Length: 200
Image 1 (cartoon, rainbow, N blue to C red):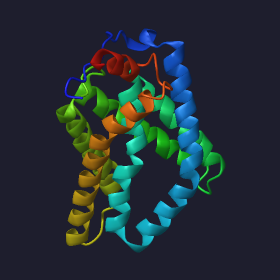
Image 2: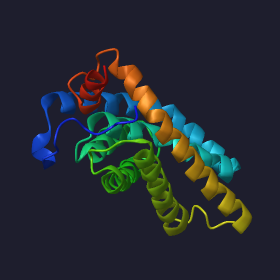
Image 3: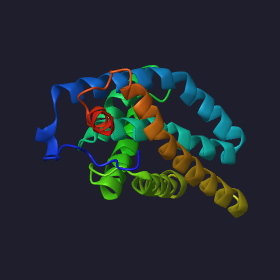
Image 4: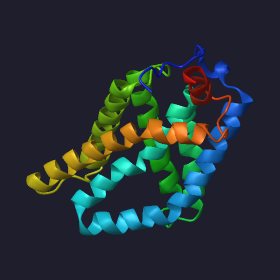
């Protein structure tokens, strides 16, 4: 898994294949449904312990790293955010705000993925860079702009460091999870499926 350069060139949105779309929609919907109870747990944990709540944010980013790593197409994060956010919003007391929050997160992940990988190179360094950028972006938006870290400085710094750390862990786990799924044939035809075939 050292050489993780996409085997096909990316030519914008026109590069999408039907296989890419179906895999993205399926994974996004499954994650959106699965995250309904997890989001409620996160809300409760964050209210009691901000550091633990921010530490969980990295693992909530794992699906974003995963689907971005598998598909490697422009717009993947926004599509994921819309589908999973819609599924979550329909069963969440936050309703439309939940979808808006998901779309904001998707936009952040889309932009940071592009900066770190250009949708082509997904080595360890690029994944770590993506994780750090996404974590910092989240800290600035949710922590500063929306006041999530307007708390005691020691707690705020600890929470921010916890978020960055767990984002990095999630990003580093992603290639292993993606390859495990690719070996089942579920994502054959996608970028990561083609990469696995080349490695073999």
